Length: 473
Image (cartoon, helix red, strand yellow):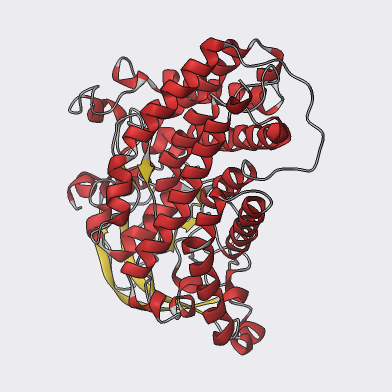
């Protein structure tokens, strides 16, 4: 049936699938390298404790059936292996039905992780990866041309990502409507990148142009995705350029990259399509059934998107098949950071020596220039940004972090850039203090070499020893 497939998009499918497999690989690698301290049996938010109170129907996961750190590691590294195989094109070597099943393996494994990931996995890009990953399984391989309906649904996801983000900005912080949010955003974003300091110091008129361009890209351009070519490709290309600008300006995990990957599926590359047979009937029926299901599940996300009480980054089904997205509806005007310190003194005194823990991504030492980590996701660093906004955001896990620092827990210390204490000499007390951070000026940077200037605000957590660490939060 000629109406079912779009042969001209065979290269778009190839590029999209390989790029998506690369993001899967990053996601599973992040899980494999960080889970023990965050979610393991001795983690800050242990999975067994979570699955004991949350039923399977609310959070479907392999780990509802069995959990051990060894089993989680096996699942995470298996996800890495399958993702690497898909990146290498293994699905093209298999029959169509086997290729579909192979694509569903990383989706099922990552769903199992996200559904028990709790606060550490409560980000929109987790659901977005699952939604895109599920749909990608039905895009086919070299045995068939890409189905039109799946290409349409990928654009539907891209539309909701961009348009939803645009709406929540217009309905949220007034600075988006005044075009002034970028006066602050590059300085106060969760995890600045190596170029964020320079972005912050761009002239304010250019910041206003940035915001206006963002509104145009998120509120006007998405509609053009559903127009004929080459307009749809031009719209997708503009989104890619915008997302690359965001990639340069900060560390947003794989949020920008998966949006770029989605946009790639809407591009029609000027190349000759190979000759492939017609799609088998069973495949057509399967794709149409999946499309019907996803369109039905779109009701709640669309209702939320057009509501005046729009919420961002919400899943409406436990399989994360269709979700709602949006980011930075409000922008902080000042940056606070929680600085964690420890001492070896048996009893803290005013003249005690307090040594600071250094994190990999979050600002700490004012002289340490931010590094590029995205699309890799530093989960603890991101949650520390929320902790600085309010202790309520850290109530579940910060006590566990302090307890493990007091024990010099090896898995936890691996999440940090540097511990100020030898492995065999843990601190006797841990405290946390809140600081106000701001970017230095050009003159201050030349004179001091520091990209940040920080001022003490208040005590965030009083000196705490091991016996009481888990009870202080």
